[in-house]
Image (cartoon, one colour):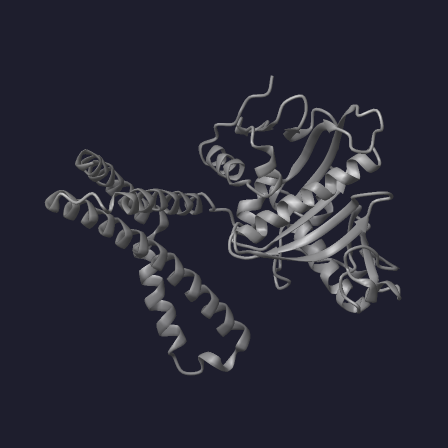
Length: 376
């Protein structure tokens, strides 16, 4: 047993340089300077006179403080584990071995989570995310698959302490959904979920086929950052917007189905369409649609390195064979494999229950190191 404590002491000593590297990557010293500056700003006269500015400063202070606190907690955790090792070796006491093993595993996981945060350096990575689902061709099969993806992502959201609001939800003809949109709220929601943007392919024995034949279905997931309304990056002219109203349906609740409160906006220059039906009030739904449209236009403009909105063309993902970012195979074997990173797992049930961290981590690592899988 004492040999195991010696081994863990060596492993912990090996972790220390990684902890120091993490401090540099996270910019802990700079964060501490930012905390002093923000606190001085908060304590300055007249700080609370402008509610909007003060709220932004307070939010920034809380985020920076939380980052430093998480890092210091890891350092404290490392010291506690090293103390356990040294005490156990000195007193020849193996009663704390299980606690040491669990603690070491937890520390490694904490460090990996923080390492991933260093990869989230994009301009909008810290923002909320708007996630949309669209069934491909194939009727009930594809619509059922779109709903399975909707369930998978909402489970992932709930499992990571984030929250979501339904923006739009259109039921399928017999089962599933034709389309849906949700707003995922929380720190780094977009940075983590941006990896999921693309076409997802399912292979399974169809539950809707009396002959139990194997079917292939496709659905698209679109992920864009929610971007503040006060940005000057885009100018949406009222004459470029076509507004349609319709009766709400689906997951919004029965009370919103009685009036034509749902709103669909069409941006005529680009052909981009956004919808919202979750509020009783038509005006509120329009406001949400405008935020979605603004975010989508800015995201496309940034991604395509375009100079002006008139250069944007609203392109739809090709929801078909060969365009998928990930394959989900239920039959004749079980496998989920990402075509961009090569990451795969045979535990498809865990994935469908929201266990996506392996795929997200692999994507962020490939993006940071530019080590994508080359498609043949």
